[in-house]
Each structure stands twice: as C-alpha cells, then as structure tokens.
Length: 61
Image (cartoon, rainbow, N blue to C red; front, side, top):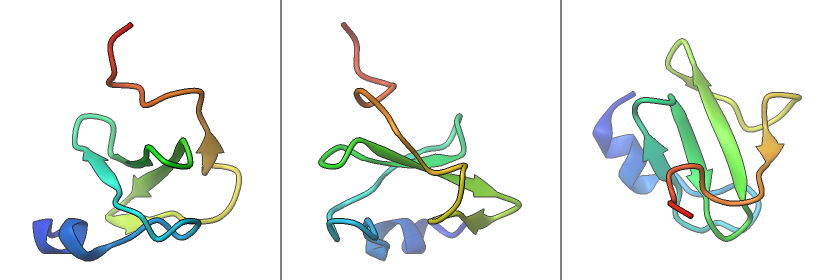
C-alpha cells in the first residue's frame, strides 16, 4: 500500500490513528486494541481476520 494512504486512513471504530506494522502487514489501533490485516494490498476492516488484541504487539513488557 502507498505510504500516503497510511497517513490519511483512520480506524473504522474510533476514527483514530492507525499504526502500520510493515513486518506483520497489519494496521493497529492502540485506542481500541484492534488489528486490521492487509492481504494482497487490500486493507481488511471486517470479518474474522479483524481481531481485538490485549495490547499493541510491538510494545515490550
């Protein structure tokens, strides 16, 4: 996906900023603790692939 899109795209739940993880091919919302996968350059906002997480996966304990 284009870097410009990552700057303007927002969380569909809270409209907050999404954090891009290039190595995981996912976007994360820290406010809602949700992760949104990117499959074949398509951002997935619905379905079983969108999951709630306990915390941002790149944060250290």
